[in-house]
Amino acid sequence: MFAGSIVAIVTPFRNGRVDERALGELIEFQIANGTDGIVPCGTTGESATLSHQEHGRVVAFTVEAVKRRVPVIAGAGSNSTDEAIALTRHAKQAGADGALLITPYYNKPMQEGLFRHYKAVADAVDLPLVLYNIPGRTSVNMVPSTVARLAAVRNIVAIKEGSGSLQQVSDIIQACGDRITVLSGDDALTLPMMAVGAKGVITVTANIAPADMAAMVDAFAAGKFNEAKRLHYKLYPLFTALFLETNPIPVKEALAMMGKIDGELRLPLSPLSTESREKLARVMKEYGLI
Image (cartoon, rainbow, N blue to C red; front, side):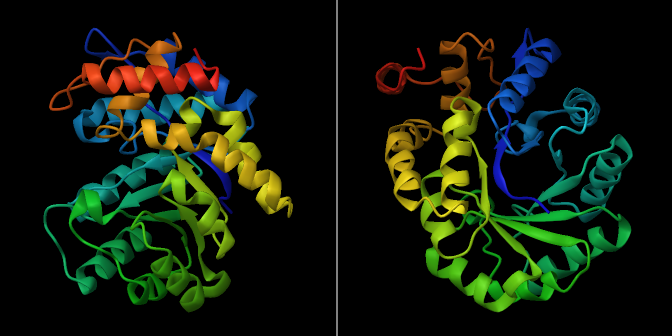
């Protein structure tokens, strides 16, 4: 259902408010350059510091702007199951094609708690759900056996896997087969993950290089492995530079360098350091983006 290069889109701000004009232009930039889907209000979209009203508006605005040209998978995760259900219900009401749900952070639930959390959301809202495992952000790793249990739930259709472990990816695919689609949660591991069975990526890098990210994924899917490898190594300096500091600090600075957004962040995120900015600017210039 969801595959290819799917952008985790930033939320542009101007003077403390969501900049809808800039967001609309970013959406058009993505669609024009072959992006296969858009995720608003994910980690890259600074969902943690959006008010509930802003979160709902960004999702609804994205659905309206996309006009069904590509799928919209709304970020709807929370460390409160009730809140995750409410955000997922809103995503459905707004017309999103699916919802992305991060594992509950800070609470550090056991595997049974993770299963019950996702099962509760799936039972409450009839919408395709994408699990999101990223232990580096949440302090909990959803293990393959838990993913396999959840793959039996009808409307849990995919997982964004960001553990950084190809062994874990292989274990998930071996345990689940075609019952769930695996998407990379780490741009630099997209190609290796596709080699063991993933079907694409939910990507940060596509914010600034959407055509090349889409071309890399499409090339691998078409069996053009040398072309996919060439694009992987072309993109690799961006993969590194966009994670010099906590995401989305570098990618918002990169988009500001390209003149696409203001670059404003919300505390507790702080502006990119001078040293990192110089490194990012050098990579962006060498790539031809600025």
